Image (cartoon, rainbow, N blue to C red; front, top):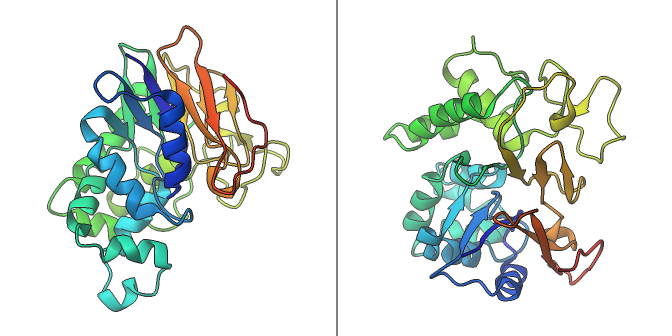
Length: 282
């Protein structure tokens, strides 16, 4: 049995199938972890959702910002849904739309496997969040997403304020702050204020900002953490954080990380445009 984490697929079915072939993925024995952002930009989001949903009992998926955006768009009037890009419209007007969206909505923000020594999120954690605290915050949002009142949450989750998590937050602002940490975090201040516009590589940010996993005085976390979201960061393994969004949709490779190896093993295949920048071979 092998366990593989896979970076942001973003609607790129062909690279995903190439990667599963290279892994010699056996659903009878192996397990997949997906770091979120299953959809948008790659042209095959409908097919990606169908494939991963079909693998449901063999995989864990956490929600990314593009996944949540799709769910929010699905709450709009039909005429507004028809204004989004053609790729998402194929999902929104598919015959199995309700099954796919209901399945996607019930994915968590965080997956923890203490026995294996790993946790997974899409983007990051607030500086002061331990794994235990992060799991508690994730469960708050998940309970709302899985409840009959989920539409209210999806309609109120967009926005850059508040940009800093505080346990004193409540209502829609509390939910939005938690979601932004889990799905949009890259750079932040030592207090955890998210720099939403800073999307480049480390070294390009303004003074006083740090990659979220390098903030001075950040909480010690007892588990390794795998995540995606930050394509300009590329493959990064530092401070027990393994970032594996290598920009498949932009022509970079699609990356898998074998989590049950003695040291996490990197496996990559060419991404959407066939580009092979920085490929790490077996």
